[in-house]
Length: 168
Image (tube, rainbow, N blue to C red; front, top):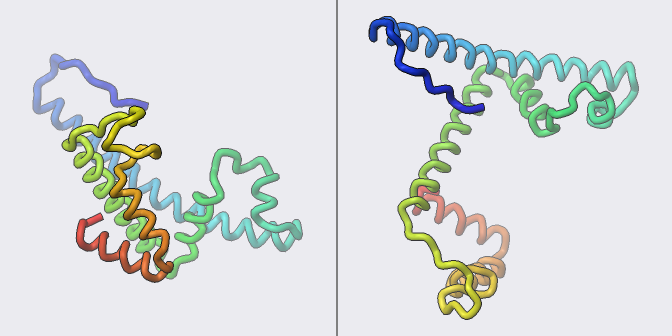
């Protein structure tokens, strides 16, 4: 699914601009409808879960896996929409989920941009003095070995510090 490039049309620029603005509005409405539908789907799944457990006397996830109705939909995705629907304020929960996704994408793009601006590392060629056998710098291996020795609590503190210090 890629973007379609439209050829220049013979209609006036303002007409084309208005058509684009109209399409933009339709896309935003469709996005809002999609988010609303996710909450609705979650509510319906929660209701179906109650029925399956009561009427079919089966464990929900076993039934889902074997019903054949939800092939191609992951348990994780189903759990997300059910969690949204069970929130005290489903719309607020959906908004928070979207904000979290936007923030995650912002961070991902920053990392990709950073990688694109840095020089490429040399390939792990046998005998290369820069890289170890695992393909990382020896100093990085040493740091990782120290991190592995930390307690879980100390690791969490370290990662929290690194996130704050380096905006990860």
